[in-house]
Amino acid sequence: MLDDLRRDFVLHQHRQTHHILSGRRTRIDTEQERADFRNDVYAAICFDAEGSEKILPVWMDTAKMRAEGRLSALEVKEEIARRYEDGTYRPPSRAGISYMIAPLMRTYPNTDWQNHDVVTMNMPHYMFYATHVTDNDIGGGQFNSLNPFVLNAGGQDYIIMLVGDAEREKINRESRQFIKDLCAYRSSLCRPVHLHP
Image (cartoon, rainbow, N blue to C red; front, side):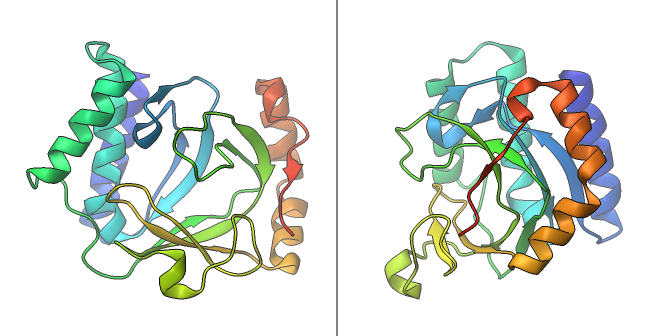
């Protein structure tokens, strides 16, 4: 995992230097907000320059702390929170976007940070940086709603907007072989739940 972390970091640095999107396939073993070490959570995400500067370092440091094995999942969560408090990390200071438009992901379908259930799902979407914004601020809908909704994640807050039906169908159609390959890699990635309304 550490070799993957180093390779992805080099890729990130190269792309950030050239001010293009920092795209990476991500195996999110630790969502620091949930204080949960797992080996079955996957998502494909692409950050713009602001996300590459402000959000990706948190993810990379979280993965590095886990790989080093010195801290528990709860201690990693606390360390990340401490770094936000002392200014080591800062939330995005301007609007931006993370593209999560892969045909499937395996992650937490619940915005309750105490819930550690995961599911493989077909839910391509866009995440707009929205620091300190709530569903009440935008008239947000429920998770997986056709209306935008907010995911608050302790310094990494997003307005989530699902892709349209036609775009989702195109993504799925163009990704058939990729989905088969993922299923062959790990059975938990087979048969994604259709969470799109």
